[in-house]
Image 1 (cartoon, rainbow, N blue to C red):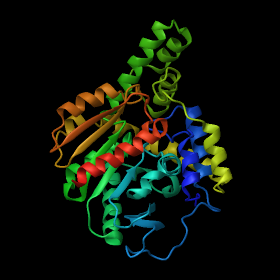
Image 2: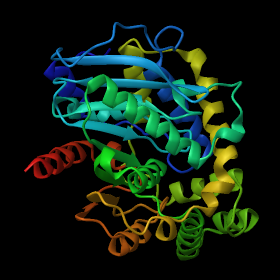
Image 3: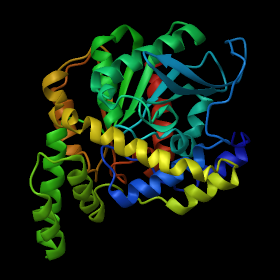
Image 4: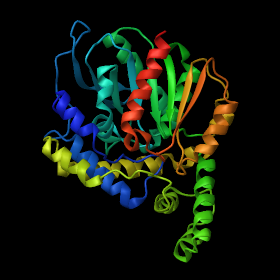
Length: 370
């Protein structure tokens, strides 16, 4: 595990890295990201270590395991300084884009205030199984898997509500789960909130065309015409998102990909042989779920929830157009709502503005506890 001393954490807090993919990474970034993730995740053969079960009598929790969910085994890491701290579950983007190592690299300070559960979803990261039936990579299956994870957390750490913090696709999963199981959830926090699959594609298309025309970028316009208008396949959307990235709609503050990989090696997490697996996992999940994601529209399917809701939106996000998310926020019915803008971020708030992201989550929890 990375050093736990404050000086090491402070060093890392002062640097920038990169994120795993949200909704659909451009091909070049997908590969760079997968390399960084593999380097940061790997221990030897890349499997979760066997550990003696830990109970809440322990002050510090460092609990890594594979848990059953239907016919799958899912990777779960739980860390924190106090077992009695508020429980937070990180729902990564994708589908298929495990972010556990990057979230810990940039946002590990959350473990001082929360008991943080990092889950690699079915078909992603350490939960990827090359022999698994890809037909089971569905929205419904992910919701059922999330129920298994939360039930496991309740059994292991005590029955209590969980704060769901979802990034991009993970933000959709959080709202869908809270709608069905409000008694399990203390709050849903959508980071770079997903609203609609087709809406996202249309927003990306309109953004690229507008910027390309304004800049007289004929090559980009030619690429856009070859891609075509939504609805798009997974590969077409990947190409479109590479153009979104060119114009700053994916990253406003671009982190250092090289530093993320080097940091992983220096901390002893390098497992280069895992890289192809992480790339493949991302590609398989995207291809398997693209058609269903294209039809997903939370503005229609999730009009109200019975839990408090917070949206954290990047002002420059055009991967999932933040303006669409703001309109959805206005229409969404919830017992309490808060919209927070991150002015220096695009689609990757936890990695573009990590310090503010951490402090904001701590402030939300303090307010919730009152």
